[in-house]
Image (cartoon, rainbow, N blue to C red; front, top):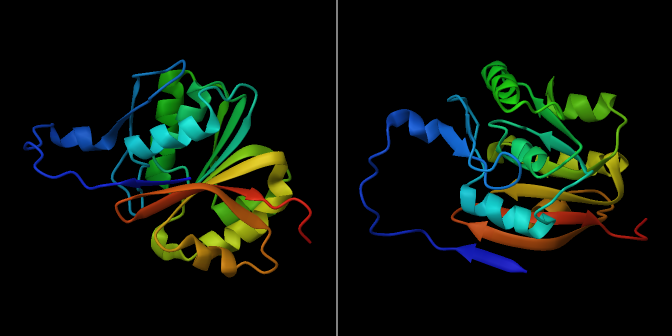
Length: 207
């Protein structure tokens, strides 16, 4: 399944207040229409609303009982959306100090007891944590070169039927080919401007 979003043309002038650019509205679930705020931080790129809507249509509107891992949590848009839709646990990994403070503030604002903010880098977390997750959100900075390396480390952290949502800025074929003994398959994917996004799963029976 491939989705393509065309750039919008002829938009009316944006009359929002400047700080509106740092606000995201939760789309569905318990906290539907609640707003979370995030800071200006290098590399922080919140997932666009229309992409989030597509993602949670793919995952299902209810994530009741799912354990989620939000690597490079950033604004928390994906993690808080998952929690709003019934995820039993959302681990939000972030190493930017300013972003961490904002995540904790939004966690308190929403009363998101199922969300746990972990102040670590993604690679460090995967090396030290032994937990398994049903859904992983993987959205590293496009210029970091970390996508293939992290996918190569994720398999031991996935439950039997887990899926990984990823965003990248290049052909996914190139990313997957860079992983030794690749065991991933692209289940669904789309494109919004320069951003490619999709769901990945482990190929059953792969070596």
